[in-house]
Structures are given as C-alpha cells and as structure tokens.
Image (cartoon, rainbow, N blue to C red; front, side, top):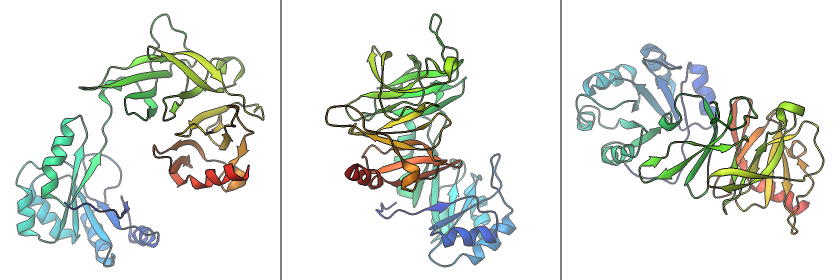
Length: 337
C-alpha cells in the first residue's frame, strides 16, 4: 500500500446511473456500489452494480462493497459485476490476499478494519502490505454502552474525552437536564477509563492550553436560558462556571460553544442548534460584540461548529449533513473588526 498526499473522495451507496453521473459531476474519485449486506442501507442488485460500473468513465474507480469472506466467492462476484476495486467489509475467513493478485490482477483491494481497541492498529499494520488501501470503520465505544451518548470532545492533548451521556447522574448529584449531563473518560495505558461524572453542561470545547468551555444549563429548566461558560476543574469535576459576557444579550440564550485552539475567538449558535455567531477576545481579556455569520455567507441553519486541532478548518452541521470551510473566513472577520 502506497501513501499519497492527494485527497480522493469516494461517494458510497450509489443507487442508480443518474446518481453515479451526479457524483462524477461533483468530482468524485470513486463510487461505492454496495452488494448484499447482513444489515444497513444502500445495497443494490449485482445486475444494477454491473450496469452502473459499465458507464463509469476511466479515471473513476468503481468500488464493490462485499460482505463475503471467501476469496473465491469475492473473485467470482467481481467478475460478475465488472468493477475495478473491491472493498471487503469484514475479515477474510477463507483464502488469502494473494488469491486476488493471482486471479484478478489489476483489481484494487480495500480492506475494512473495524476499530474495537488497540489491537485494531496491529491488524491494520499486518494487513497493509497486502492491500491497496485500508478503510478504518469506527465502532461504538464500549465504555459508554448501556445508555445513549452524544457530543464527544477530545482535548488537544488527546488525554480526556468529554461527552454527553443520557443516564442518571450519581446519587446525591443534581440533574439539570433530566438525564443528560457531561461525563469524562481519561486515556490510560490500557485505553479509555470508565467514565466519571464531570458535571452539568452541554457541548464541551477546549483550547490548546487546556481551558474548557461548555454550556451552563443550570437554569434551562427554569427560564429556558443557557450560557456560554469557561469551566474551572478540580479532580476532573466541573466546580466553577464563569459565564462569558458577550453582547448583545440573546433572549434564547447562546449554545454549543466552540473555542479556537489558541483561545482567541469563540463560535456559538442559538439554543435551537443553528444560526452561527463569532466573538473575538480583546487584548484585555473581554469578549467583543458577537458577529452574525449569516451576514457573511453562512446559512441560517448552520450550527454545532468545531475546529480542527491545527486550527485550519471549521466544521459545522447543516440540514443533517457535515460541512466545512477554511478558517480564513473567520480570520478575515477578525481583521475587519
């Protein structure tokens, strides 16, 4: 497997020839065609896979996703479908990767690795020399099983994972959101620790120097308001919530804070989870007036923002999809304000 610095985009679960041409129009490098699977959305018949693969122009990879684990069965399936790449979604149980090189030379092999722990890294390393690419598939975090969890955030030193957990708070603690508060898991030599209750809040964000920001939800059930806060922590517990003073005062209450890696600005939306704003920190440590990002090209339904650890890209959700932009759009606002 050779490394490349050129990003390639695969659009999966193509359902028709029309969808295939649409994906190609928008610069897809590869099209995923899902064959029969034990579960999940997207499978189409092998006949339709064959028809779609036949119209895909040179330079675009047609990828057959297969749940088969017998190399001979996979080889026969590839020949029926006429694709030029195979994505194996589970471990091979019969045969070897060498079988593919002998029977269907020139066909790219992509192996899916389902992450279940540190051992998955060793599995990926052992498989890599025999395939053209590895697809890392995430798995549910075992330590958060039993109750629904959401809004994960890993601190920049990769040592602490904060997340919202829909489970009863420990005895003696006050629950401000009914059944959803912030919990923390700490990275250890053996993986992530058992989660511990961190405190009330929602949607954690952190800066490079370890400062933690979240929503203060203590009055949400009383007056419907939420507050952006910086949190002081002792023994992995939220002990003091310092509310940020950002003008104007919003009736609905700001939500979902996203602090810049260097702490120089903070993004947030309204309590409904959309309509983004940004506030820049002044030299005296106070916060500047909130800038409405809908006046600078953002859709009003955009919200739930997060910034990559290197500070280069801003991700946000919009109409149930993830979107991203270069952080320069925010930096330009700083220079003009």
